[in-house]
Length: 460
Ligand code: ADQ
Image (cartoon, rainbow, N blue to C red; front, top):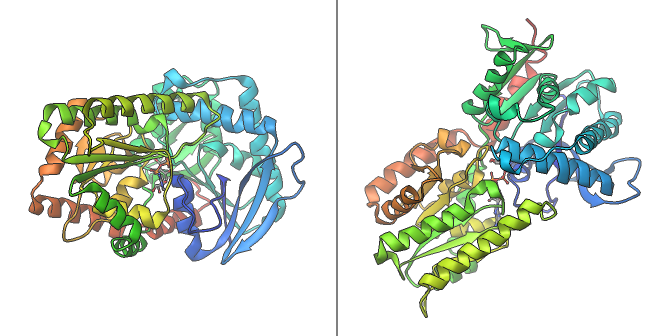
């Protein structure tokens, strides 16, 4: 069977026990660990003298190949075009989007560099699966250095609406680069429709009757493959974690109060400030919750060298401080706000004892926390998921309490409803969501995608 070669900006921590707070890393590691393959990406090291060859090492059935970046690459490609242009733009934050030609050139340079370093490791029949917005031009770069095998792409973020994408000066080049893949995977039908809308409105291609896309003289498959979680494994972990010391400690500290839990990378797309304000509104409008519900927000910092991430951290500290200053009592702090990650087992235990999982991003490709929360619940006493309509997960998890994260009152009402929800309603909502996660787990996601890639190349 042909080998699977996964490429992403970063490879995941090799030690599986370690916490990993990026959705891509969590999902790709779960998808790869069962079938094995090669994982190529940035080592996380920045050095003025990167090694000429990738560093290779094996862990179980997985082979890693990593490369270092120079300070200039790190600045222009990673902090620059990837995280100061594409990330905010793809999350509809035009107000935070900046663009410079220098950074864009750095982005293309690193994509070429990745292709040049990967090419010698490839065999003709390898299937190359490239991930996320950092590496959109990499298929073109691999073709230029002579790789003729199958190349697929999966976008973990949203694909923005046509009019939003037009704000990017290089939007046409970027879409042409996407069309160089054999399979372009999106999280949801909403993202797929945005892509199709761009292709047809900009007149760069058309949808064929067989569902394939024809653009730039090429036929390829563009489709939605909603990413998921390792459902069976999370169930097992959460069952074990229910009796673990950390979970007991947490439960004891709550003193019988209901837990409202948020778990997110510290990112402006996650709607954390709005979430804190909604919890404040809950305490204002439904005062019976004062002293009876505790909100815990775990938010490990990410992309700390991008200024907007420094700003969001400050705003959150202020918001948490203000709510706590207003409502805290001698034996109760309303918001426990922790800038740290916890290991995955402990996290599953926290999910299990929470009455409400609060997942309220302003935009999110999928949001794995929503799915992890559902998978970790006690089937006899499940908690309630409050979920933003702008998370990709809302397409499948429609049995959650779906909210608009810009509507503070609606979020507060949903929390109140979740805190009061009778058992039979909790059960029926949870069962509906859990059965979806049993069917579409991380293995199903990988299989669906690779089946599409195996059918390539597509022809008219
Ligand atoms: P992210 O934006 O990183 O992922 P998400 O999908 O929620 O967002 O994944 C975060 C992962 O990190 C989850 O597995 C979560 O459990 C873990 N995590 C977060 N905070 C943690 C903490 N404090 N301690 C331990 N673990 C923590 C990107 C896209 C998403 C998309 C994923 C996968 O932005 O929309 O769902 O990729 O495609």
